[in-house]
Image 1 (cartoon, rainbow, N blue to C red):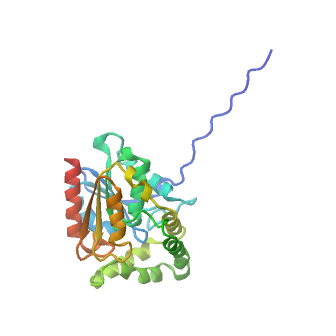
Image 2: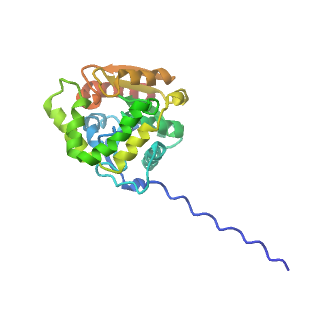
Image 3: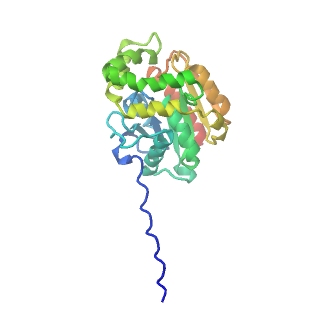
Length: 281
């Protein structure tokens, strides 16, 4: 009698690249649409204090410390842009976001956070109701010089340490006339947020990414904001986003540098609330 062929054992489920349970997430608001805030490459959830305070009265606001930043656990394996986007998707699902129109989330990304937001919306269009892209870019991969500079940042952080690294970079993130207390807050936030390997993974994800050709595939409506005195990504990069996304509105935030959400929070929040009102009407 011929023995029945043995069936191969089912493969164990793939281990996620990062456990979302290791994320630190600041939250505000109990009612309204879900709004996820993704910080820039040198920051943390602390940078969204003005949004948590104001927008939390109108929405359920989440602001993460990205994997390997501030109070979030370090990744055990390298994360690329897709990896960061998948962690963001898991976070949204853990807060009830899904494919049904009424459960989809709005995603606000500043600078690098905006690049993560774009990739999240491309990979999971059913999770994302709309985008707010603030002082952002399609990524640094389309410019070899910018990509090389981005990759060099990790070694700079290793050599200088977080405090000196932040002290050097923070003043450029706001306008030349920004008050000293804002410069100190930005410096302190960065110094407390950045470390290796997380910062290095984020820098590499920016250096390896050029989403310009993918922008027309973004189906979610988008609000693109940029400080008129942004000396980091600049209005030109935001114009590329606004021009490439079919359903995009473009706004300049007066008297603001790269961190418009912190330097001019009242103006910034007003535009975000207007956007949420329009897209949820």
